[in-house]
Length: 336
Image 1 (cartoon, helix red, strand yellow):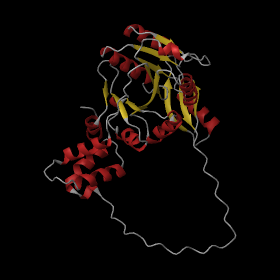
Image 2 (cartoon, rainbow, N blue to C red):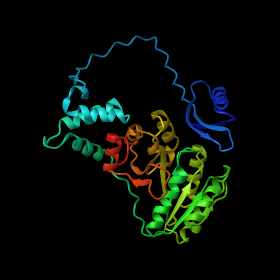
Image 3 (cartoon, rainbow, N blue to C red):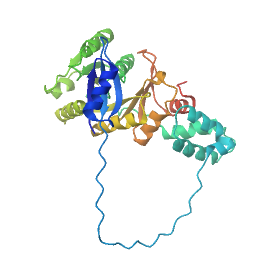
Image 4 (cartoon, helix red, strand yellow):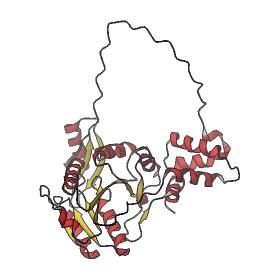
């Protein structure tokens, strides 16, 4: 699956160009408005269905029918008074009917009848959403690369993480692969100056020397990326190869917005799957009251949730994920 970028002077022009170049089935998964005018769309082509096999002329006798296991009746939370409120809350935050039924079935069969139904729900959700933490690194430098489409909040999240590490008295550096996009380096340079940390621009095609990071006396390098999956995957894989054997730990985190559709989340995650992300960072939680789809997506993709971002403030609007935070998002639609 490949993601293409299409530009136009207006949204209508960009959509028409995307339709013309990639067909009626192309999926728009992200749109970005330039400050001076113009629109850039991230567009994915739907995979063509595999051609059906031609039926054999030879007649095949049907196999004897296997004995059918008894079908368990479908669990309907709306008909179970005990879990009805939980189901209603999950519906308001955008949870799927399958997830709602699974969770409510577990709650209804809770072994301790004295536990309040909302406490049961929070505990059941929490077990599904353990916290993700960076692996301990005793020596050397850790590089944390944030990947995802343009406009999802990678740069802001990177700055928040850098500020968090500085408050913990860690030595931090910022780096970027995004050297071509207008204003990208200037924006990071301004943030680096405000934080008082160095900035390294990794130009495409220029192979960095591992010792530059290995002996830099820096605890953590936060790496911003281009927002183009094909370019990001190729450049990060090249960096990982260049740092093989050095005292450098390389971790990749996928940044996903809570405002994206289920289909868009699946397409983007697939586009970056070659990098085997350690986990995800969920952004734009302040822009939606239905965060359950991105949480369900993380569970289905078996990607732990590392951080949650719910606003632009560098000092305030980033927190570690964990059982309680995910329960709040599923049941209340916002962080406590």
